[in-house]
Length: 106
Image (cartoon, rainbow, N blue to C red; front, side, top):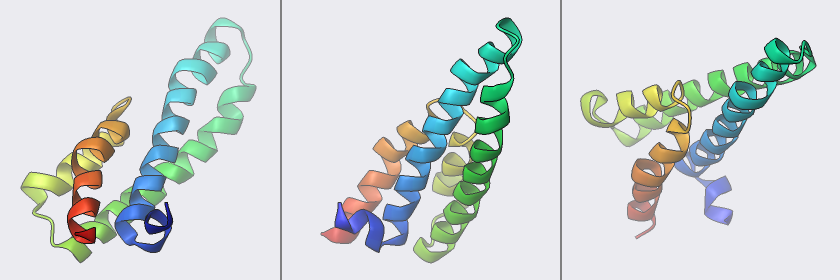
């Protein structure tokens, strides 16, 4: 767990998780509450939180991409696209980010 906080790729994994959770909550809980129950409080709270996490994720992904010399066509675009797909950041964390972090620790 300590390595998650001490490396840039670890911090990106944490941000990816938080961004993914905020997106799922916004998409599947807050938005239906707004339109079907006429209760916009969830989107008013989660919308800005998700927006901030999204921007932080994109900036950190680009930073890690430059630091790790990722090829745009093979890694960077997948990580960036994952942030706009439901459950995308969880998939990318499991398939790409976790493996990169393991290889850095070895």
